[in-house]
Amino acid sequence: MRGSRYSGPAEANEVLEEEKDDATNDDNNYCASYNSCYKANTFWISCDECGKWYHGKCVNITSSEAGHKERYECPDCYYERVGWS
Image 1 (cartoon, helix red, strand yellow):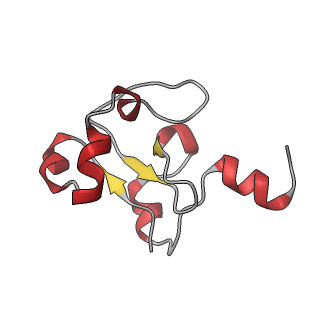
Image 2 (cartoon, helix red, strand yellow; image 1 turned 180 degrees about the vertical axis):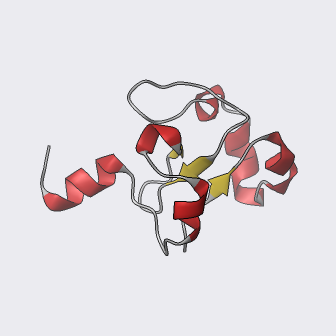
């Protein structure tokens, strides 16, 4: 499964059924990056390993680059997998 992408409110009605309950949680409105910023109208991507959502800019990936990947792995999951802590 390819990393899920969210590009702002235009896609807000396309939330999957299992994600609807999570969408009401205020914590889901913030990027999982270390700066925990919030930008609703920008490109978002979710990690295929942990499911956390990130702004593309916060994890250095564009929407175009994400479209060419089969899977997206966030920095935390990558570092855990390769043994960097």
